[in-house]
Length: 270
Image 1 (cartoon, rainbow, N blue to C red):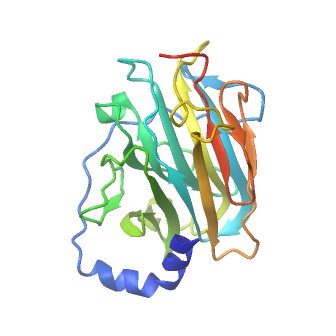
Image 2 (cartoon, rainbow, N blue to C red):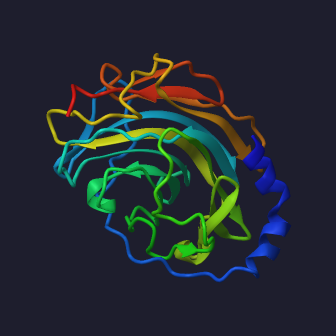
């Protein structure tokens, strides 16, 4: 929607504006636990390395230079004192083999952020190798929209990713947060073939009390949502396919080509 068109038409303005900003290197963030492989709808959580992951996802196979979504930012409940669990929503762009990825979203993660408030995050993968949140080559540009900052629970925000002259830029509410240099992929990753917007909950094996969104099931009017999905520089139209790994715990509702609702409280209150 608006952010996608803004990015597409404003590339020249953006590049000119960068000369007015001083790029800074963000502090190294906590290392992300390995992400599970592509999950299968309705088969239950994907468990490995001592943790389990549940997803409600909207995905499209395409070929694009970028994408954007608008998402509700929530304050999901996670198990008190648990530094291994988290709950997040994000937009991710991947290569066809899903080994190279750029991500932006919000997360509630005590182990990463030291509190249980929602924080903006960015992340990337290179040829299947994990990196770290908010660092590992990420170049912070904005002085106001910073990777790792807290965001407003209960408010919505626009999240976008676009390749600009070989670098992967990430945007929050129309502001260029910063970029992952194309050199991280040796210039080999310039367009994405898999776009996914999703909610993710990481929890202990065998049980989950963590919320997705604010814990409301997707068919509730109070549930979390993702909408205004838009593609940049693609030949096909936006067309999300929505699925859930454990729909009895974390559900989807009201799917369209560009939006869906998601949420759930897991197996019970923390």
